[in-house]
Length: 261
Ligand code: ADP
Ligand code: MG
Image (cartoon, rainbow, N blue to C red):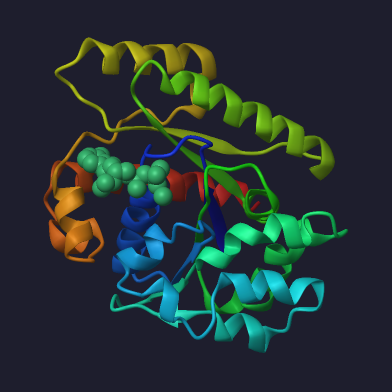
């Protein structure tokens, strides 16, 4: 089982879109996929057609169970989606209260890791969509992943947000004892603007090989796909944006082989 956490402390950079797009493509490649929504805004949950306010169980129950969580409790919080091979652990607004409730209890940063270990045989890939806030949810999602995927909007101001995310990683890294593997994914690329290209160049200058050597273009098909509650590749298999996510996925799957060695 490979676990990827999709994180950036800035909102609107394509985290949820990246999670759904990659998950949809993996499911098409016959991989068993679990998408976990840890964002109290529940965008991913709504994307897959679940009403966040009407859920029998959710990621909140997993976190509330804490360190003593059982496989049964994890399974209860996972729902099948309309897409074959793709399951979802949905989010509820209550997730926003976890920091206050659990943030200070010891070992709370490893609950998700324990939960995933209990269903490790059920999935080939787990993708975790993370809120843009540094808190117990992000800490959990970072603690259990093989690689952090960092979507970054290709515009100048976004570089600042990225610096913040990188500082967070090195901060958490210290408590984890070893470094993170991460891939920066240039998103919302507008080939008509200088700003997009300039930002891309700056990114590569600063972060070198950690930047995927492609970009996700602006593509209106993504919004249409979310309106239809379908992963982009099912809605518009030939869209430019989908082709870009396809080549990103191929790259990430190659890295995944090294990540698990
Ligand atoms: P985040 O999860 O980081 O807040 P989202 O994935 O929800 O970001 O994206 C924010 C908005 O931008 C959404 O409306 C989404 O449909 C749109 N979007 C994301 N990526 C693209 C893209 N490559 N082209 C066009 N629209 C996009
Ligand atoms: Mg989101």
